[in-house]
Image (cartoon, rainbow, N blue to C red; front, side, top):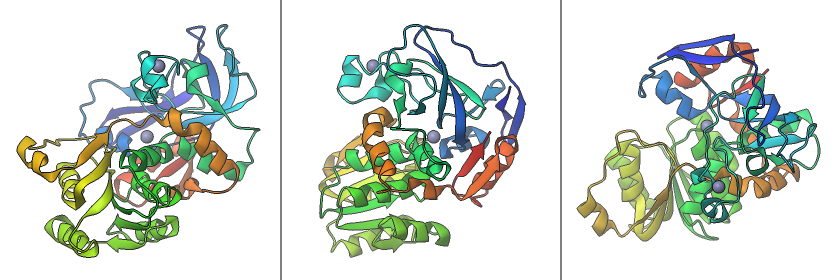
Length: 338
Ligand SMILES: [Zn+2]
Ligand SMILES: [Zn+2]
């Protein structure tokens, strides 16, 4: 089997890898139908995270179960399944509290840009669709594996309420799907921050009512302006830089909520400044497993189409081009077909 391996910044290879096998009785082997490149894959690709050894890549996946270990009870071969980038038993106290991405037995999926994948804790991690889906539904189901679940968590953590005013910081796939999530939750006004025309267009399609193209101080002023000097009820921070986090905090009204899901890189907050903002901060790696059943239902019934964030489709062996296109912002998100 060939799989994706990152050797150094900018150096992605598709090369021979060991076939995944059942190692623990709670494992399943999934034949990947579609996988993709994540915005978070770009951190090591750009050298922002050190790469100490050749590193297999990929954590977003869906496909057909081929084989299950002897202790797997609910997942069966032949089922079409979607799982999160974080595995979970779905039974420990953190899972039962809705934070499956902090499961006591969590492992991170990291070899999914490949034709086959071992998924630990199969029963607690994988969710089956009602049937094997038609091909055209695959992009939207794949989006649930991370970016849609993460956008949804951002909106959930930001306490989006019917009629509320929402600001979304970040116009990557997660930010755009944060817009879609806020719309689904009934937000009255959704202000998306984006400087790119194709992304602004998709944000509007997903439900954005206003676009702010400014950055930094001007952006903060523009948002104050749009919210009559008050600030937004809910702000979704979907980038993870010091600038985006400060943007989020300065856009939130006193007592408002921020859901932050961009993996922080260099973000440091001043406790005293934060104290006087009166904002709620809630974020982290999204507990995608909590939202999977509900989101599968929305996709299955045709109510949401998060797969629209995939604007580039490549055969899996051209994965390196997917990274390049996303790095150069020629593509929002690259879908890969084994
Ligand atoms: Zn991802
Ligand atoms: Zn757990």
